[in-house]
Amino acid sequence: GQQLNQSPQSMFIQEGEDVSMNCTSSSIFNTWLWYKQDPGEGPVLLIALYKAGELTSNGRLTAQFGITRKDSFLNISASIPSDVGIYFCAGQTRGSTLGRLYFGRGTQLTVWP
Amino acid sequence: GAGVSQSPSNKVTEKGKDVELRCDPISGHTALYWYRQSLGQGLEFLIYFQGNSAPDKSGLPSDRFSAERTGGSVSTLTIQRTQQEDSAVYLCASSFDSLTAERYGYTFGSGTRLTVV
Image 1 (cartoon, chains in turn green, cyan):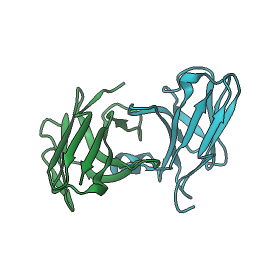
Image 2 (image 1 turned 45 degrees about the vertical axis):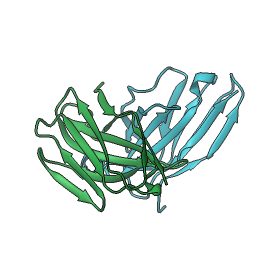
Image 3 (image 1 turned 90 degrees about the vertical axis):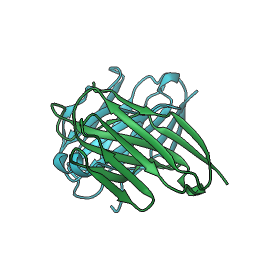
């Protein structure tokens, strides 16, 4: 199956700091999605990206669809304690089963007050 | 329903016993997905339903795992003769259809935490 390499695996930061995480793939992706999972809950969609080079913001979150279509990054500015959770990248790649998304291993974010 | 509902939320079972996990997708969603999340691991795809059929079940780890969906709605994931390595959170997700899934992703349930002792 498709491999999504997500990094870093974990981050420990102080409240107010900016955060950056990224995802790379060996295949071209048609869609990149970023999810956040709170403890004890399922992942929730944060941002969706559809075109190479696209830059999209959602409040303090900004994500970009890489020009090569094989990578994406997510930035969180001015982190706050409620940003704690696991962030997953996901995407759909040409040739995969219609509707099937591939997920990265996640970035565990801890924010210290 | 308003969201994806999974039951039970927690299940502790003895090694060797069978378990059934239930998923009730959002009303009207034709696509349904099962994923497994082990401690410290990402989301491992298990199976995908479109309606009642499963065009992709390539992620089922062994023949002890099976899933069905009836009436285009509720799905059941069955694990026979459970092993300790089956311990994980089993997540169900749904989307209006497969095209919607590719554009807007899935809506996940809160998962069933399975512990095999």
